[in-house]
Image 1 (cartoon, protein in one colour):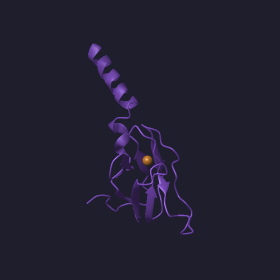
Image 2 (image 1 turned 135 degrees about the vertical axis):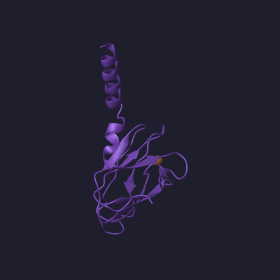
Image 3 (image 1 turned 90 degrees about the vertical axis):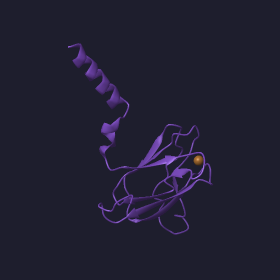
Image 4 (image 1 turned 45 degrees about the horizontal axis):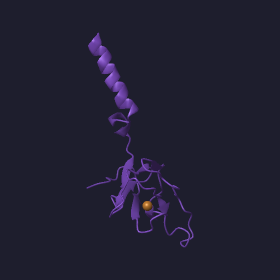
Length: 125
Ligand SMILES: [Cu+2]
């Protein structure tokens, strides 16, 4: 009986910490870093409709801001606002296209999101 109780507790901790059970979704993850290349991977390729999630494990505030949208006369499709240390920002999925983005606080931080047609396109080969 004690063993059963211990297993239950361990599983509970895993779920609360956001363990592997939450990673089953096809969300693409991009990490922010304080050094080059700043966004990892700097160029991420995802299928349209796949959510993209940026994680900020750094001790610094950052943003994920769609670039060049104003001058190309198309709407800016995402702007995270300030993402605090330990925070994250998720875009629920985008139409196919190329989306350069940057950090509004540190303009040297630049990344590129390439969204391909169709859900079956491999994201990494
Ligand atoms: Cu930044």
